[in-house]
Image 1 (cartoon, helix red, strand yellow):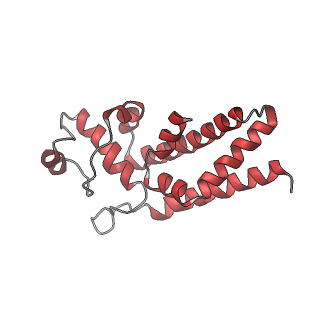
Image 2 (cartoon, rainbow, N blue to C red):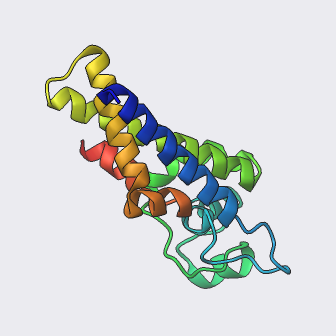
Length: 163
């Protein structure tokens, strides 16, 4: 198998694993209780709901008021306010759609980080795309990469900013 085919295969397998993990772990409403460990739980409780709280005039850093008024069940501190800006438009969408969009954008961030890595290694053209896909496949198949995307954490975005 050529390097390009192996990179594409690794990326596609990783993508299927992530999509399966998010869909399989998404707990819509389990007996009226949301799961604090289900798919996108960190996205919901530390990014989506705090932005919605701000839009409603609730301070997400006022812990008691925030927990009393917003549908969260993890006592996670909200992310640093700079994280809210890029993802604020997603709060107009229903949570499942916003979560799927966040995961898709996060996968894009992983690929963009792979492209930066390829460029830093001096790769150009099709070879750079192969490196980016291979990087994306490795990240998606790694335990930290999988968990960051499954739970909706900001790790892929931090990596892109640092790259």
